[in-house]
Image (cartoon, rainbow, N blue to C red; front, side, top):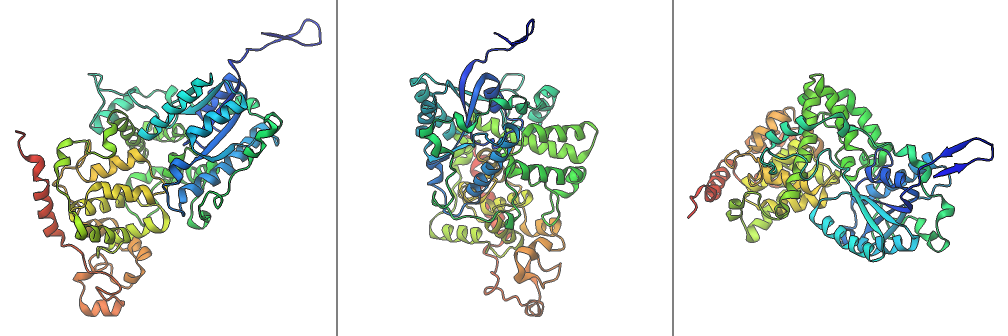
Amino acid sequence: TIRTLSRPNRAIYTMKKKYTKGLMWFRRDLRLTDNAALYHALKQCDTVFCIFVFDKAILDTLPTTDRRVAFIHSSLVDLNTQLRAVAGANAQPVLCLHDQSERAIPRTAKALGVDAVFANHDDEPQALARDAAIFGHLAHNGILLNTYKDQCIFERSEVLTQQARPFGVFTPYKNAWLKKLEPYYLKAYPTERYATALAQTDALPSDLKALGDMPSLTSMGFTPVDLVAQNITPGASGAAALLADFLPRMARYKDTRDFPAVKGPSYLSVHLRFGTVSIRTLAQHAFAGHSQGHAGASTWLGELIWRDFYMQVMHHHPRIVDRAFKPEYDAIKWEHGASAKALFHAWCQGATGYPLVDAAMHQLNQTGYMHNRLRMVVASFLTKDLGIDWRWGADYFAEKLIDFDLSANNGGWQWASSSGCDAQPYFRIFNPTTQSEKFDAQGKFIRRYLPVLAELSDKRIHAPWLADPFDLITAGVTLGENYPKPIVDHAAARERTLARYAVVKKPKP
């Protein structure tokens, strides 16, 4: 297409865009920078509206105080700030609806008169079913749904075995992942370059103006949460601050990541979950250090690859949401009845009598976060000390973790219970006391979340039941009153677990 200016002998050659109007549907990608779907929307459409749905199908299942909803809400405020920064003060804010996505997206797309809806992939089973239904509703109105890879480096079937099968073991997957990696896969999408296509406020039809008003947490039935007071930094700006803080520490990541009292992790997991940071940005930094031989960067890159691994496992085996990856492990007879419920309640409340386990559960309940080493410790304790079904623990984490991600949570729990792909052997059972002595030797983490034990010595804080009665009295600890006695004997529990898991060794008929 040629557009001729008033001055003679001059013309500007412009490429006609594919669509007149498009709708960018934000989901778990709450950022403007390096966003695949947004990039394609801006590049292909003359005008792009943005939308986010506080989906009642999800929100109605959550407790009224939920940090994740508050995080999303604050991140959308931050996203609107980003929009104004690149598209001007009159940029149309994200249209925020409190509704069911299956209703809201087709209805809004039709009302706006868009030609296509753009979104990034979400491969969780329920999300795929939702998207399939919305695809049909949009198609009925002559509107396309275009989706793109954005939340991982390699997804679905991009990394396969030489036999073109999905990997079930991490190390060969990691090797294949690294072999496939090229700079192209880490390249950022230059969304800002096409920001002029973002809709301005005057482009929104007058009868839809109300959609520009973001619903309050209270109006949606949620209690406001002071995230700042809980050291949670929402939005892309929060992610950028955390990344800037972590990069100088990345070289020490391998040496510090397992110690909960040390500032070792990046704390970016919640930002990866909701897409307030690009996985490509993180992988760029990790791979750069890895290429230079830095052990800390290599270890952190490995954690990012684990994330891709679990996503591709769930894509190829959606049954693992509620069943074991290794089918023979579904034959395990877990504890049940009133006694099992009582044990599970004690675990949830951080009242098992094992300080590191209890401190970890208090961290989860108080902050919505748990250190990664401790996630393994408490999961092993629940499944192999208490004999409780891993699904109970996975569901509790799903309710409490601010960084809850279905594939990673499922993978972690099945790893700990030995029922998943590339899981620890069933006979490897974490000893909660030795884990405590190794990774919180001075009891700093325990003292932070269990102040009742603060006056115990570094030696006895890991196992108060072994302390001298005089030492307990001096420390103000009364077992069974202000701190529980162990609800299970680890040595005896280990023998029961080995017997419980023997079913997986039985020869098939």
